Length: 260
Image (tube, rainbow, N blue to C red; front, side, top):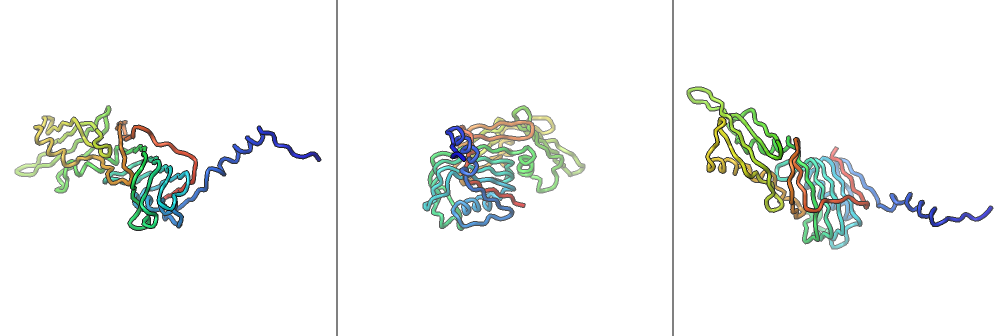
């Protein structure tokens, strides 16, 4: 029997087939993240701090002994930031120096310095509605009803009825319209807004006072990575926030988590 010879073309084909093996190990967790490696501890901190319904973290290599991570990608579903549920949050961070890994269990990792971070956040209209309706209309007294929020042609429209009870009962229609704008790279504010009471424009001073109760609409200041968002776009059922450069998924060591 002759000797088996591998031509360069065959060797290259075999290498391509083996690529998934070179991409890195995959670790999966359900309900609780367990592990003692630096990658597992970092992943656990993200899962416990952001409380997502599910998430994935990709590392190009495990964090070193100082807490430096060369490249990390995060894809989170159903986490909550600033009192608003985030449908999907994607983050790519480059050359991140975290605090000493010995403190990643308690009090948790913090970013010391970072080369850059790219982000995209998708928030559903229904979740924005839930987050701001009470604050916008202040329904602690139970007199508000019929509250709703709608994204229309790049604008935000909210309305609700306030019941006045004195000598008789009267429902007052309150309407608020404006657009979303990014402030400081980390917050979404309502801008260029108007407010009407029973179809009549409310004076600017009263409008500003009412709207100030809900500003900012979305606040990502509490997120561990120092985000700088640039654009905000509305569709019929969601708002999408993006940095100038979008995050990119890559092949590497994968950590996957599902809350249940």
